[in-house]
Image 1 (tube, helix red, strand yellow):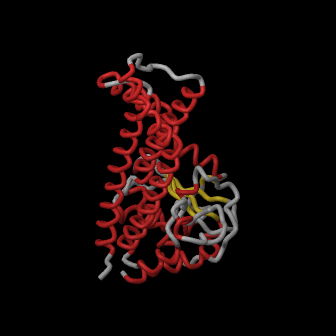
Image 2: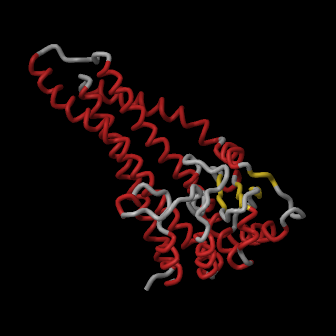
Image 3: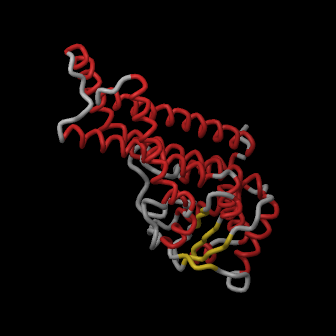
Length: 305
């Protein structure tokens, strides 16, 4: 029997398994590229550490200011209780029930029903909803959506996805660096014959890795994003004790295929439903490139709770 508790446990486990695999994958690719460039032992590990530090610094700013950046990009405006009393009251009540500080509340002037949460932790969080969401959902459905978004905050999903973005960034920087080095003739090559033969094997493997690894990294990123959506669905249903409310909300949201005005590929994973519009993927293979699991599958799981 499917329960909210079993869904939460399963999706947390799957997320951390994916995170472990992703981290090992990034380290393996980085080490392989170091070997292909002619470095061995401690030198290869030094190069690996250098890239990890550089990429981490590149993502430091986006991590600590992600909430402000996303809010600015979405065209959301802050609201007080008098501006959107229903939304404000639901966020306030569910925040108390969730045991977290009330996040800042924003409203997006867009008729397409959608919402998102952002912020690196509970004290630096924000929830934004479109006007279309408030107009088309009843009170219980809106509670389901807000509970889902508060669960993202409670589960530190922005933090998890920031780490994922760092890892994707490491792969992108490494691949680009390696391909550019090959274009300009390479460096750090071994001068002895045996060393050149060993390097040639690593070179072929590294070329394949440099081309395919960024695609694989994005696929893992999307997979983790989908698992966090399932986790937020289950956590939100547990918070409201009413999975039907969120299921009904998702049914209504699915009826609108138009994109949210200011949404972009960089922020799409934050929304409760894909804000870029478009039709359902024609195959499961194409579905691997989605940040969100199929709404039909999410509704089915919620209805079974």
